[in-house]
Length: 640
Image (cartoon, rainbow, N blue to C red):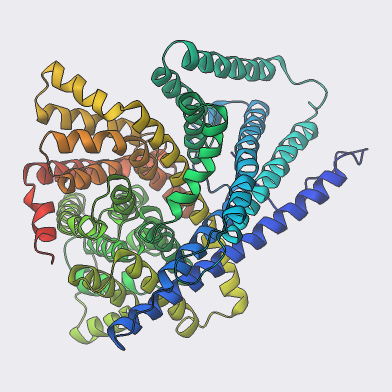
């Protein structure tokens, strides 16, 4: 789906027929943006409460019993209130390989069809969410410690999907207006009508396949079709999951179970860490917390052969230990590093490719949102998963740096940097100390057991907000914009996990992991061959989907299979994450390629060419970790 705008849709010349819809649409946009702000305030409040509770526990030996409870309800409200704002801002990731090849008229028509699906999905949540509220009132459900009436939280949940429904209508009307403005309001071209007809016919056919032939095959093909039509991954997973539940449980139970699964997925203190880490990554990106990182790394590493490139990788590694996001990593460091590398002799293609590759460390070096999702899906210790990625992350930094030195010396790149004096190094360290302190706090707290992952995320948010106010001196207006903007990514994560969990229930009902395991056992495959096949599947999926979507789609099936073959899930999770890193810089949907293109002006195919040597390095490093499992398992084994 293409990005929307809060600006009212232009009125078609000679008529005012779109004036009222445009005005109402503008009101809906303002409402969902206001809900985005409310979501950000709730997340910030949650972070402050949890951080205060950590201080109360370790300083005053007086932890509260109510903070975890109230924090969960704040996060449930925050995550879903922002969903409509996320739709408005086009933050819900979709596969647009096919739709981007179409004529504009056909592409807009398919987007309109997509908003019809989003509207239908939101109506399910509203209709059966109201039942959740009335049931809660009738049963007088209340929280354990504070006695809060739970119907109030569930009412906020319903209101959030009312806002999503309104926003989807607003986007649908906007696309119809776009078609009208193009002069095709009375009769779409035969090509577009044929495309829409074929899409609807294919959907009906796959529904029939699911009902009368094979449910698993039908659901798989239905998911692929919806993704191909450009429906965001989060809503595709939710729609397919809801349909699967209907087929298994019946119409009423299947539809009512869909919002219940979404709600109970987020009714967890552990899951809270996901939106908080996403939140802090965006705050750091926008507040300038990492401004001094590149100068710090340049001061300490710039004198090496190709040192400016090594310094760039160092900045990427340090920022990865704070943000947990590869896209934020590449965007933040790339803005500073690419011009600097060009200044010292790097061609733009190599500079852009290096940043695209270095940014991938964001989902390997802890804290990692990818590892967090894997932990939630597979019920592993998230702290151990985080620490499992630390040594492989350092090894990847070293191998990428070695490759950078070799390439730079061979091509004569990055020369001309003098060794910085010790005084200059310590001054650069002081300027970067605000950002450097955060990974020490997070990783030290996780490894020592002082923090749970959720508490680490809350402390990181609090730290970033205090830094933005005290050091960057951001005023109320800037803070409002910062907090609001951050929630659009939170919304994507929220609805993505909710949809995936619904699909996960279907997978569990159908016993797909057991079926897949039985197939491989019966086929006589060697366990190593199964792992290689799984890695191949992930590599192919990484060319079309982001790592979070791949984890949510495949881990419910792969994790039991791999564990059943006797492999360590920590080891496999690290390999899985490194494999999805490659997907971030491979077409057609390499997120880092397009981020670097946007900030540098270098065409995506040129960024890809510049990153190819480093893709090979990532693949070889992944092979090294595969052959030496202790690189990912030793450090977690030393934790208490």
